[in-house]
Every structure is written in C-alpha cells, then in structure tokens.
Length: 100
Image 1 (cartoon, rainbow, N blue to C red):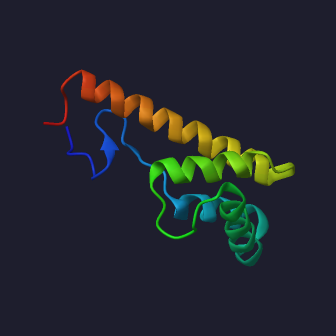
Image 2: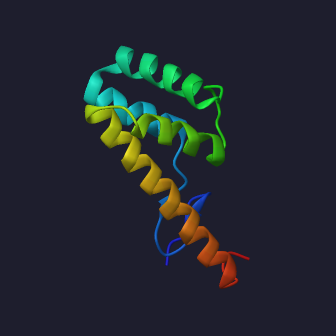
C-alpha cells in the first residue's frame, strides 16, 4: 500500500481541505477575479482573515459561503461536507490508533 501524502486520512487518501481549494472551486465557476473577491468578502463576513486558514476558520468561512445563493452556496455546502468528512475520518483513524 502506498504511503499517504501528509495530512491525508490513510485508506481514503482524503486530504484536509484548504482555502486554496475553496478559491479554486469558486474560480472554476465564477472566474478567478470574482472568486477571489467573493472569498475575501465571505471571510470578512465569517469573521476570519483570508490567508492561511486553519480548519476551524475554513469551516466558518465555508458556512458563510454556503449561505450565498446560486453556485457559490453549492460550493460552500460542498466544502462544509468535505471538511466534516475529513474531520470524521481523521477522528476515526485516531480512535483506531492508526497513523503512528
């Protein structure tokens, strides 16, 4: 079995989502300029500072994005689901004593 990349859950190859992932998803749907602008506004609305967000801050921003209408809201919901899935799998891995 291949060694997972850093910050992935073994057996699932699911990496922790990042702020750059959110911007990339938005850019695919809205174009790069609108994506960055929307992301910065969303982070401000969520009370987090755009930059290198931790998972908690990223989830707050994703929840704020999920409240948007249209494709931005769909992307926000998707990111929230991915964050929660990652956290659940990571917690399960830790409880099972893997990754030592």
